[in-house]
Length: 466
Image (tube, rainbow, N blue to C red):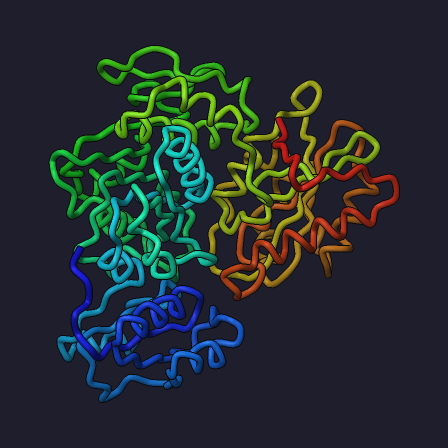
């Protein structure tokens, strides 16, 4: 890997990724200029953390002479200070690129609008079952820069890659690159669909003909529409497209990959359910296959895999009504996956009481209307996005704007009947912190547990609903 040899580097963005970059550079003897661009995703006590490494905090970059700049994922590359660096021919890289240049083992990267956390965890489980030494990194609680010192003792690092990290890559080259999806429901302030496809294409940009791209077939079609073709060997997967190399057929994960044909896994024997989980499983199986893990070992690992907390997790049951936390759902595409994973009620009638809402990020919600009509009895909406959600959904399902999560849970609990599901799936961010989903997941869990007669699930015994 090519490490950063220069001795004067600016780090823009003081979220968890930015702080990890500062720590790595400081330990390497680099003079670090930590710049706070005013993004809301700032890590708690950033100044005190930086002070331990002798780094002060600056508020702007004008005139700052550095060899490189490192941008956290919270920093958009249209930011004036990033444009200023580029105008002065100062190279700008992402925290992912910086960490990769210091990494001393192979990388498997997992990207996508939704599902990358679960898919990355499944890939790691498969690798571990195949006796590989594995690190999982890339998410806010464990940025790559934070774990690079441990990479010397590992066989590979499995990376969860936000699209924002790819924009600042130059040398990044995973030996296996996984693209889970390119959901069209991204906030307009982030990037338009063609731009998103071109950004996702950077996942494969440096791959060689002997590397592998594991790509959802629908996402691959979008890449090709944008004029992008992975240079590596490709395996496609899909829960909807039966022409993909791996596909979902009446509960079975099937393969037509040469030398690896036939049924691979029966989802009825797994602890995770739903079409989106089928795609996560297929991606993990494909990665394991190209990394030469025996199918029997992969199947045993994936059958035992439990859902992550707040990702379609059943947290309790009361009077025959199940309460499900999907607090990680930060966009409409994730809400769609959550609803599709829930079996319809008797005679196919709606059986979901939906709790959604949070910050208004400019998402388009209208496309979800028909699905809500067939699955949702009523939606309880909160936060700044509530009125836009109601305007988009009230034609398809009754909508009630509430003032708090407590009010939403109490109303849903009072109306729900045996066989119903109370689903907390925000479909947007609930606060500015990058680690907001554990906060809002805990809030929902604590609120549900206050209901009289609630039978709660232990955190170590998670399940998903069907």
